[in-house]
Length: 336
Length: 298
Image (cartoon, rainbow over all chains, first blue to last red; front, side, top):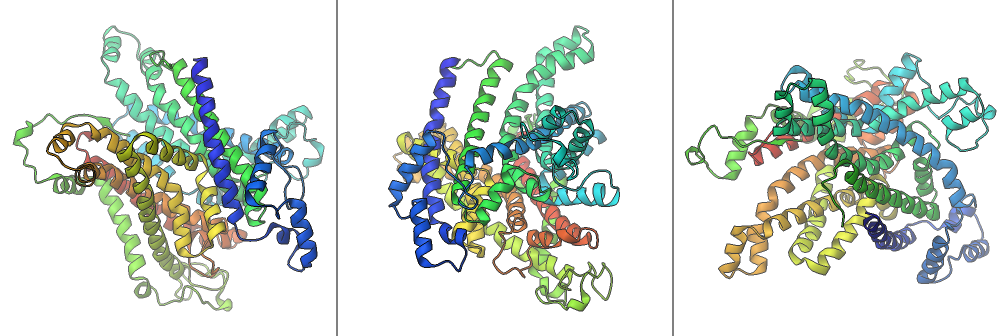
């Protein structure tokens, strides 16, 4: 097992290495000179040249890449071109926001998707099954930004139930010192329960908007997986033995139906990170996704390549965790 | 997802088969959800093709005096937007753009991904390994960031937007085709073809690829739904067509977000257009999957 994990971790290195080359070449092909972006259109050529030198932009591309990769190996992602802040620390202050949003979306998707899928499977071909099928079809067909604004219009503008955007009420921002940058944790640390409730309210709509596609997919796969297992001989045997239906469901069906569901949940993480880019933009949520969009618009290519590299790394690690998770759920799988 | 259940109601020999495509079409026309999907797609196609006949209004130019008219006023069935342009006209012409860019991007993705997948599956060994690692890299990057990157790099023309969306679905097509080629490679009919002395190229083009087509067709239909959503997503994030006046569903949505209170219909109608066309292609894709593989039953 340990051997397998190590081998898989090592296998991510060439992928990341390849990605770093592709990204590096790619962002240097982007139009728009960062030095000009930094100084504005009216800067003198001398000043632009000086800044280019400072940023190392005058060196040959391979030299720039070598410099970049050796800094990266030391955990130094460089500084943002636009505001000169170190990228890693900026990332670490924004990443918790994205994590909170992603976890919120996952809780929504898994918490609702699995019961819905089981419900559909137990009412197969009936109206309940039909309703769930329609919900999951809508879920995969509605873009995050359409759903996001629809929710905002109904729940905020009309009903005033939930705040429109951002992760905390502006009036509360100053009373909650950012310790971990996880808003929910920071409000608890500050002992402000009112702020905690407020932060939770802010989290609801973005989580639903981001979690709906995974919800639809998890519902579908749970339904199919439960139906699959339902036809197995050992389930029939268990029922024939007179075991209570509830116990058959929990012990015999779900135990075995879990496997594909867990795989799919793992696969959703990549989609969630991509979805976070749009969700954060709609709800002006302080996270990595919105930062990436702003960086692309501002030609801040160092930020862009760092964010994509880190996202890709997370994606690969999550896939690894999912693969390893199989072994715990299914003892028949042995990794060599 | 579907479960496998073989239809044993009639012996195999009794079934009158007129070839896989005609059988599939017959099953498709009996598939209720697929028919609903085809109806939605027809509405979408009708709007795209007959745009100038459906509406007399100009989707690009409007009169500011007409701005933010609610639906139903002065002949504006769906109201007008901030610039006083007819919302229906913009949605109908937007269908045209979504159709062109959506179909174009899926074709580009198929060509790109198909070539990579076919080369990897047919060559095997080191070539396969390298090509699949490249698709791994592409798959590890969040799709929308990849698409934004391509548009930021190459510009915001329609071909560039198509390529951007194609870049996100090409690796998926590559994987599907390769997987299907590998699954078929050692089947009897391929061995039989090989034993008759057919060249590798002939086996690939005449036997392996046609037998992989069904899974690729299903994936491509489903990809049309995501392509329409992705194109709108690019527009929404400000990476739509370079002319800001262009009628594009995602851009229309973004332009109206400031006016959620005054004109919620400006968000609702383009949103509905995106959702309906996506549902159409999703239903048709699922229906195709079921009818092209008769062993699959829902």
